[in-house]
Image (cartoon, rainbow, N blue to C red; front, side):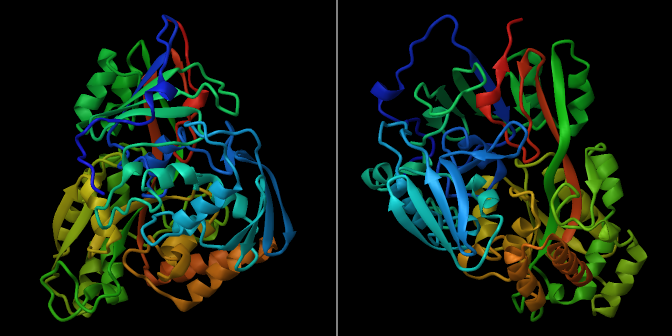
Length: 528
């Protein structure tokens, strides 16, 4: 079933969403450089999409103001054996259409999230089956012990089985194939806000859920979310008062907004690492002038790329200091970070040229690079800087910077030879990087975002061992060994950890989570 993307869609029956407009109603106007590509919570594992959808849907396990785990649709959980977890479900919860939430919805959401078209398979990949105990209790039977299961569930949102069946949305929206269904444009969750009307790439509106099962600490009644792709226009909208909050603040405009008497910038470290990936599987690259062989299969070429890139220059000149060069695929705030492996290979163009010559490419070669231009702070500028650095060692980069609406389907199909991506460990644990990015692509979401198909059997073994190891010292040693192997092989090229920059009116109080989540239920709009 196809939907026209420009059509405004009423998201739930008007009788359910009718809101009494009163003088005291508080509206929050949020603008972002990009848009959520779908309202389907199992469609795309992308930060902006998930941070919007966490206001509509609930997971079994949530994160509170302090980012610590807190009960969500599950009131409590415990291990009843090394491979079985009992989750007791919250009673009295209803979806936005009034349907009661039960164990059947959890089981349905599991089956949906592990579907081949789902982008969230890695969040449920450790589960062998779910056994229904009663309407408000389920047992998760795992393939192996997995002590951090609750942390993994914070981004797995629960959908209504009945609603999906009634609306022919039992399968997730598959971004790779361009297939959409009702869940692209309509949503029926249990969360604090109800999606009201969606106009893709124009605006989406939300209303407070008056029957929400939990306390809403903020005072926002309605939210208007507007994508503004042009950075200057985005900032102008905040400065003029057209919007109340923007994310991200372009790094070149941070001081300008700070200088406004009525505005402020919220800043903090983000869990995200920006990195480069290279196709290491195909015998011949898709988009390159090298025929009959794949240069990226040679570690010397990967290292040449690594040492040709001036990460300090990018952090200073492109990111204006809002980035910290990094040698690992996750930052120091993530459990498992290895301080003794924090040193990057040196920036050394001459060494890069020598490595390319040794590998058989004395004149370099040509390759296409895929890059989003509306996802992170200065994505396209980062890619342009990388391309300029590589040009100095003889590598010609044909840069294809595009909206994430076309970028993601392409790279998720692995129709890429060289690409830039960012990753946030939503569990704040190294396994959430090792399993989806460093592991060989396989079943259950393993290696799902390892888009260049880097593969090392020892890394795969260590990832499985880390998943079940309960001894912190042994686990940390295993993670360190994985990091060292990956670094030595130049499996990917980590660039930097980014910093969060949100711009907002001084009259607005926000909770800024390190995963770049913006929970509207905590937003307080104060009187002037």
